[in-house]
Amino acid sequence: MAKAPEPGRVKTRLTARLSAEAAAAAHAAMMACVLTRVAAHLSAKPVLALAGRLPAEEVGAATGLEVAVDPAYEVVDQGEGDLGERLASVWRRVGGGRAVFFGVDSPDVPIGHLGAIPAALAEHDAAVGPVDDGGYWTLAANRLEPALLAGIDWGTANVYHQTRAAAGRAGLDLADLPPWRDVDEPADLDALCRRLRSADEPALIELRRRLDALPQPDTTP
Image (cartoon, rainbow, N blue to C red; front, side):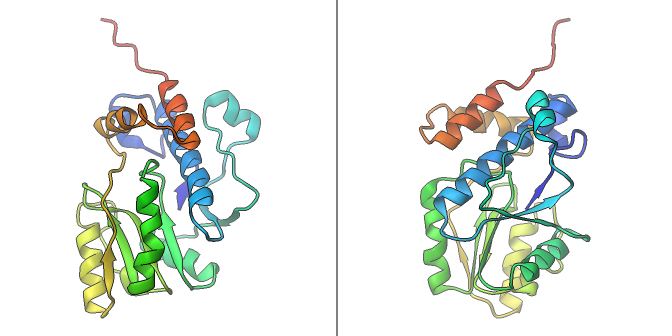
């Protein structure tokens, strides 16, 4: 699940430090990384559920907004509504069976965390990977479970706990995956860049290169 990297519409909290264009370039870099890593490390049909339109190749390359999408991906529109409604719509569109959802905010989630997803789904109805701001880095389930997506205050610190409560009300066995971190604020981006200094995975090295190349604001008095 991803928004197209449109300046002023993505990663707006990063504009406390970066320009809207640089924040969108950070979003594009993380999105490209997630697309590469999902296809490489999960044995599943990859689907990009997109809100908006990706820039043309030449435009993206000139602006830092390029996102290469592997031909293995099926690209679908997210549809309308809040995030829960769009998740449910995409889920139905791809068949309503087992699905693992990702956004772009946790691009460096460890491979071991990804590997824990199939094992969790073998023993539980669904699984969620919490992040420290109250959301989650992934939601996975063996079949379409609308109860997991309804009545959630999306974009708030309540998402993880409300999802867990919703699972309890629906009688679903929801497993916790290992927690990780996401990128919303400038401090989160700084933390990601620090983690990437020791990365040796090609997709993460490329993410580091793109983030290092982001134009920084001129702070000269």
